[in-house]
Length: 380
Ligand code: SAM
Ligand code: DTB
Ligand code: SF4
Image (cartoon, rainbow, N blue to C red; front, side, top):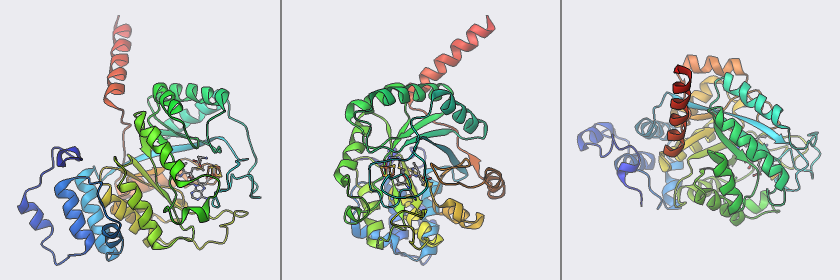
């Protein structure tokens, strides 16, 4: 059970006077009540589905306002993490995920490519770092890493080298066994992305080639290896509101909340079974983000795929509701992302600042020691 102190030791518990000032408005929506409780008590893992549904269904401006309150309480609201994706192994995937342009079952025009070589990967990471990105995420169109020893060992090398560049490193390579998670941790991996995508009930309508429980098992292996968990989902797959609530409920009742929760809006790619899905509206994103912020206050909530469709004011609503991470760079994995100059302008106009990379205590100590050694050797 997490304690109040575990969320932000210097801010909790809050004085009842400040609380009553904050909430003396006539608002008593579930978003208001639950945000107040989150601020007072810190993160919880015992959410009921009905509680989360009531937050999600609150009047949208109230949800936005209370998502913003929790966000400001648990984070520096101006800081936005910039992550850059690179597809290191593209297309030709055996899985049937109905949203994905990289499945070999659909004719989407994505060309299959084998694992990228080290020089190309390191060069891309360097370019991302120079553009201000602090987390580099390598994606592979695989069902799993089992049985890919040569490729996997190569990826361990990439992880080590990028980590040594002072960036956070993330991978999304499909299902992982425990041993592989441990090897990634030893190589210096910061986070592993593995999305649940949607609710347990709707999941079989989207993917039939691997189960929800297999996804959860990979998350357990990642967590037990001491790697940060990055897990979220996609909206706009044709799911009901109940499924969005179900996804958030599963994530928010994991023994430990994911450190990052990507919220993707479906990019309906021609050739996939979901090509004709109606684009999601900004208010649906705001509801997902605001609810995620209230129920998982400490997580980095990432405004992920689909951002390219939203204007600057629309993205501002997402940041206000509690999003504090984005993908930057010209591409996501196979699809175009927001223009880099437009993102820089957005940071300036909205007064956002890039979030510095953060490493675990052990890693930070190692880095400090390395820096010390460098300083000593250069002064001598
Ligand atoms: N193959 C690995 C896997 O599935 O775990 C890693 C890569 S996979 C492309 C990573 C995630 O990207 C998926 O779980 C899904 O949430 C997201 N994604 C893929 N295609 C998308 C699309 N068209 N629109 C939005 N999100 C998408
Ligand atoms: C996540 O949740 N979204 C990213 C990342 N994790 C790997 C992927 C989005 C992919 C969008 C489709 C494409 O570019 O292929
Ligand atoms: Fe393959 Fe991942 Fe795409 Fe599914 S989402 S088809 S596993 S690349």
